[in-house]
Length: 371
Ligand SMILES: Cc1cc2nc3c(=O)[nH]c(=O)nc-3n(C[C@H](O)[C@H](O)[C@H](O)COP(=O)(O)OP(=O)(O)OC[C@H]3O[C@@H](n4cnc5c(N)ncnc54)[C@H](O)[C@@H]3O)c2cc1C
Image (cartoon, rainbow, N blue to C red; front, side, top):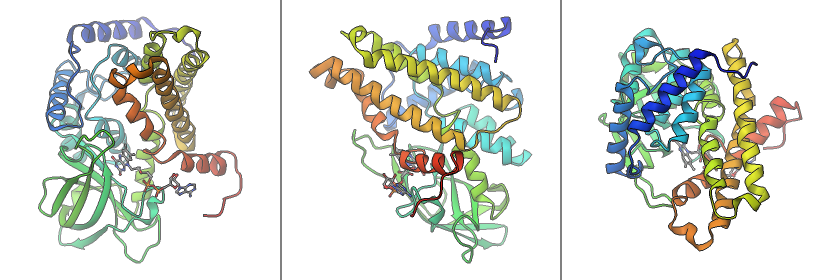
């Protein structure tokens, strides 16, 4: 691809840079994993939305500005370089939205996308269960057919920010006779619905937003089935590619971390800093390649697993390097939250062991290992 930016791309980048320079809060917002921080980050989402910067690549009718994917990458670079707040709406705008664009009905798109863009609905992902994390196809939560809709029951776990979120998207077994990947259906439901209990789970940093969900005959109308009944697995794989591959972990955040790393004492004498810098640039270039492919009609597919391995390992390596460079000061530095979160990178969005299985079997064509 041509890496020279067009005048329109440069103008877009400059506008974003200027807006962020004026609006990014001088003091960091409180952690979005707390009730107070969640509310502050929701207000920030609303501010972004008012400037039509919350979902730049979406069509205008849903609150975006129809920016190209390349401009979205540029937006992300500026966003992280400016030290702007983490996106509390990320599960919705980066995971569910691409799935709604691909599989949602026009009615669902109208009902959910503008509210998501405006920070009115913050979404949680309700996939994992106590016995179904890596082996997601073994989920046991059920959807039972009733007049006009479905009754959802079961337990979901490890749901990021669900303690304070408004709605969730999840997979449920709608055909009790079907095995594994078959007979699953993808549902959208409110977290304050009758029959939903949300219970926070302690995290390593003690913040309360991470939660498990208990569902007891929660009614969901037919119009909140996303995709076809029984086709939930296929729909979910579209969400998963975005989680591992493109939208959730854009290069901007790793470029910004690599830049911060170079500013630490002794950084420029440390080969790990140089390696991190090069790796972040390589990830940026690989993302441009992905953007080109997707723009030309290609899909993310199994290669998203390689992305996931790359960004999660890079994030851990950069934070460990920062920890070493700072010595005892690290524990009271601005690196703490990022360091603790980086440790979860090889686990969420599908563990790295699973990504290696996917790469081995689906990209390299190696024989399936014993399970
Ligand atoms: C910070 C964080 C946020 C999360 N947010 C969400 C969320 O919002 N919504 C949601 O639904 N889930 C979320 N998760 C859950 C996450 O997706 C699961 O933790 C992950 O899929 C692993 O599942 P598990 O924890 O059940 O581990 P298990 O599946 O029990 O795996 C345990 C270990 O065994 C390994 N293993 C298992 N099977 C294989 C195999 N076939 N080959 C090789 N190794 C294997 C795994 O790699 C892992 O190391 C989150 C997790 C974390 C840590």
